[in-house]
Amino acid sequence: MTQLYQTIGLIGKPQHQGASQTIETLHSYLTEHGYKVLVEASVAPSVDIKNINAASVVEIGEQADLAIVIGGDGYMLGAARVLSCYKIAVIGVNRGNLGFLTDLSPDNIIEPLSEILSGKSRTEQRFLIEAEVYRHGKLKSSNAAMNEAVLHAGKVAQMIEFEVYIDDAFMFSQRSDGLIISTPTGSTAYSMSAGGPILTPNLNALSLVPMFPHTLTSRPIVVDGDSEIKLVLAHENKDDLQVSCDGHVILSVLPGDEVVIRKSEYTLRLIHPLDHSYFNVLRSKLAWGNKLF
View: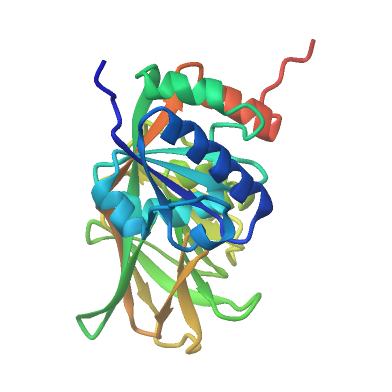
């Protein structure tokens, strides 16, 4: 029978004992079953594997049919921003804390993985967003985010002032610590901690969540996922402003700059076991809506 996946990439957190052990286990299982296995170059030196095929994340995206990411949600986000540019399928093994994006348990990985490799799985597409910083009409910097893009000051508890436009229509002006623009994937992350709504992953929507606004009437709002969101920074702001993409990538912003956020042309193809349930994830990870009896 033809294998559904021919080449599989293993991506894991470097110098993490648990991730290294899982990579070694997976590599042994996959090679025994005839798969070509690529191990991400930064983690390859920390695993005990002979005749290892090391590759960058980009090379895994270009050459592999499936990527298995071993780590927490943060590590998955970093890999996702690269792998989304390719048609590769992605599944996660949770070696972190909550594990919203990493379905498989390292303590019980072979049986569910064998089911997935045989085609018994679910597939969903998660969209990303692009954040672009414009200065005097020229693009200065940009990056992608799977969870959220956050406009904020460089210092803690520093008020900033900005205007928000949706598809070039003025929405509101605000003085606050910043604004979180979240995808459905990111709605259970930083956005939720700031009081934002939980959005199911299949929604084509973005949420805008103010951070400590200087008013009693400012509330989170959900807009169409195909909207273009533009933030115009007031000239009265201090110089140390930033846009954070997934909390990993920082884009510098100056007073008077414009920040444009829109849906990326790329999506991440996530693979889940057949018994995966988003609401079960909410209940198990957040104790959300558990039965009383």
